Length: 243
Length: 303
Image 1: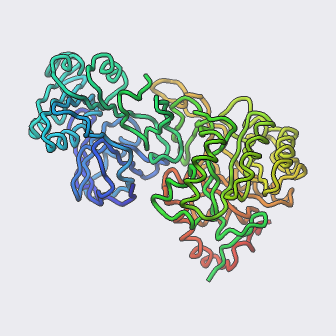
Image 2: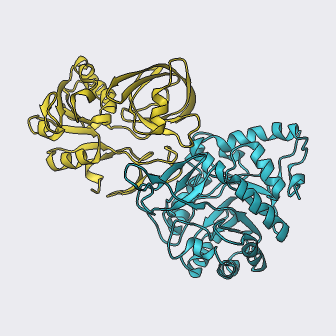
Image 3: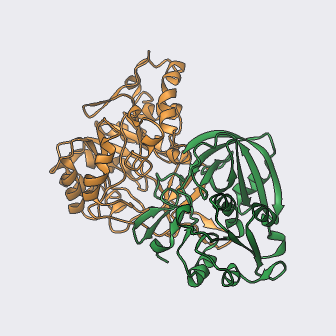
């Protein structure tokens, strides 16, 4: 974990209530896909934990949905403004178990961390399938970006206004995969848990105090003992999760 | 060169900065980001007789100028603290540490303190009779002078180490409780724990915290903490560890002027993991600004 001041290079709307922000600064603390950053905002006491969508040696890309007062404030920020950010938080996904045909399932604002993961899995020679689930057409984002990486992409919308009508699990049944990685809302996780035929990794969300393991605010029980979502997670393996 | 040293029940601290229990774990995770030996000491995660998961989540809620937590004393239990946590701490911290202890009965408190008493790393005990997040214990001992006195005297019997009792602000008369602890053998008072608070989510129309209420901390409670430390300083002879909303070196000085010998920093560690280090680095500069050569000389200076 590092703390630093990051300059906003861009901050643009990419879908309904969804924004993409690129931050410039030290990225050396990021060690895995699926980690997150924790952002200090003027006038807000606690930081805002947001997953990392992508990064390179100079920039971090985050994609966030406006859901409350903090993200409302963030979406108003302009290029050139600066943010105090803790970087390289959480464990991230472990790619070692992917097999040669991993499946990525992202739901809504759970889609972003799948992007860098997809890139890395393709880099290690995997044939990657991606299912992106949204409520409706106006919420769809990153479809072309995943295609550009070379992944086999399926988009689902709950109302059928775009792609396959239904949920990610409706598309999951038609795909042959060796392992799965997912991030999204709890109802989606429960549906995946009921559908998946392989091992996999889930990235969880919880209200956090610190985001770096100090306050025990986001603890959960697992088969391997108590874990902190922020420090021992957010990614947990299917075998250890207590539903 | 200014002197930041203070003496806490016979043990000298390089400075009065103490990360508060529950915001610093057992120290070793902060040691990954800076050398925690710069601290005066720190108060480790509240330890109970048996392991505890704590309350259901969500157990954190943001507030204006602060936060509410309802963690509920999650800890691995005293045996594992001794066998696993303290050895890890020893590898990165070479000063005496403050052992924070909670319980659900007078016997629990005495048992846990007695277990920890033989650990050489422990310099002081801070007995928490003020956790607002557990039922059938915690705060219920800190809201009556009789119960607080009973815990103090039973713990006093099992340790000769300096004994601080951590008090709750959720009371009518904190002075009376502080005096009862002093009379029952406490070497000092640690104050204040969090204030009982609540947030309600407008979308769900329900409390944000699963446990409904929780402990409110952060800069918003600093004036309450200052007032209570000021009042207790006038009523007791034992030293006070002051806490509640401390975020800067200026806050440290203000709390010491109210009557604190040392200060604890809590919520600020969660927002800024480098908070205590930054306060320690800034302290000499701020002392010079206010013409303070010797920090211990200002204790209770506002009286």
